[in-house]
Image (cartoon, rainbow, N blue to C red; front, side, top):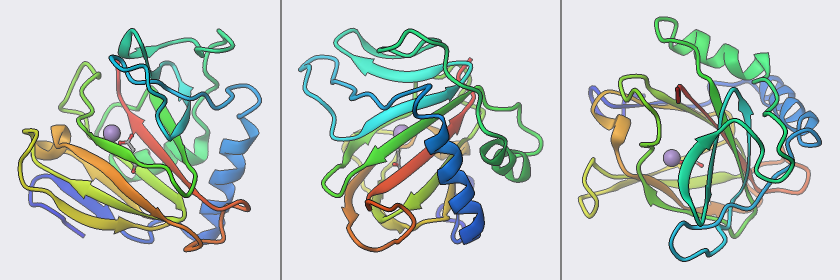
Length: 201
Ligand code: SIN
Ligand code: MN
């Protein structure tokens, strides 16, 4: 489904239940090597409600020093594990003409977590789309324009949905207003996992 011509594309039910289950298993199998960390906000130092980890050459993080990509895990100092093939293949299928992603951010939302409106703008080349996969409980996603404070629209992202932010919407403001608990059985303790692929370097 096209949300906006030349911009956001939403592929509802893109992943089968089996593919979703495999992807969750692949993510979980790497959490020992790359444990979830709690990012903090640059200026206030306040903890975000979402826990994160990364796979790939470089990973996104936020702390008192600001937003950035770095090649080592902030707590363990280890390099991030490789992006699982089951995740990379979604990019290959939907974006065959784009360079492969080098960053895979994994966001874990418990039922009370949310994410404020922001732009993805720590990457070097904004011509490469952002690909985002939803797993687990449904989320209320808010999409704005490229200027803060503009009009926004909201839609729900359900387990197995894949969204592309590209073209004019590559730098659109976006965020998660809420999670709808109990809307999916995929994660045994509920909540939502978002997997975002980007080319950062
Ligand atoms: C993000 O913008 O990093 C996450 C968006 C989402 O959870 O769908
Ligand atoms: Mn984002």
